[in-house]
Length: 410
Length: 82
Image (cartoon, rainbow over all chains, first blue to last red; front, side, top):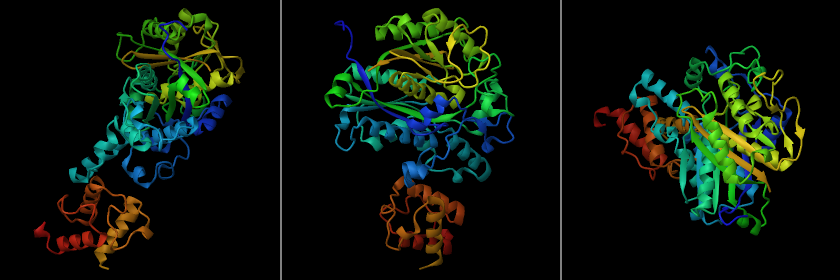
């Protein structure tokens, strides 16, 4: 370690709530099985796209209690469930920790859009007096971090990041910086999103961003496949507990992996299309690798952004090839979980930690014929067991916002 | 108990998922973990469901269920007083 190297950051807890199931084990098993969670969704019946990846069997009342089941939008409820799992996994006890030293950073792209839609409809149909007094606290994105602070008694820095589909990764990157600058000793960081609402799905469909493989939902999300035609919208939450490694070791915590670097950039190119040469991605990737003090040829695995849209996957593949060559095993877990928007970067960071910890690279679901333009070692079919010392998790958002995390073995 | 009390309890059970066994005439809204924001929401729902208008500061979380039922009863019988 050189004098300029900041203290290492440990990942000591993981929580996941996804379309593959509630809990880290269910999600990890679903992702490793390469089993797509996409299905027709009755909520979307009659729309031009009616498939989604929705969390199965999530009971708000069971997971967050009666009061919160009525006063929180689903994006907050999913996030609380994931955060509680992450904290329990870390072995930390919120009833005894020094809350002033605990921060919360959550990525969220949309906020309480289902609440917004429901209440807007009520106003149009029944008049302003029918609008809920809870509309604003259920809607605004920052409430996810506010509720987590209340739930976990965490009174340190508290913020929400909004970098579209990079939001969850941006949150984890911001958390890394809070730990490194000494603002906190512990950060609960991740992302939560519940954007499977008729208006949001219609919005993405009107852009041409969603797969139209409606008769075959489980084959619709197919990152890097030659026949991909768009993403499948998903929902969920991923949360990590981050601490300085020395602190984690001192309390005897199980260090799952280390968060070693973070790089962020802007394409400054287009509202929704990525820079075709991947310039912004390349910049973020190189920044993250430099921050982690690792060389490109040391990267064993990439959890790609890999949305399954024609433009994203092609541009990402070019950028990865240029920076890393073809030595890294590449996976997009969106083939299984769909695209969870603001939560995606956090869910994928958690999966990257599990990949490093277990030395198991999940496959990319539905990859049958690799796009000839994708000159990468994309893992397909079944899991690949290999040592993973260094892994990268890519996340890119509309607006050209990019966030890259580097995870290394504990 | 009055018919209005029964309607109010029914609303709390059906719309706010309160366990009926937790509710009694002397139960306060605080006892049910309903704070001032929740109470505003309750009064909005009452206005919509019962057709009764009462100001959103007419009741407080420390009030009992029977007190609010009586309040609603009065407003139902003399709407001009709202």
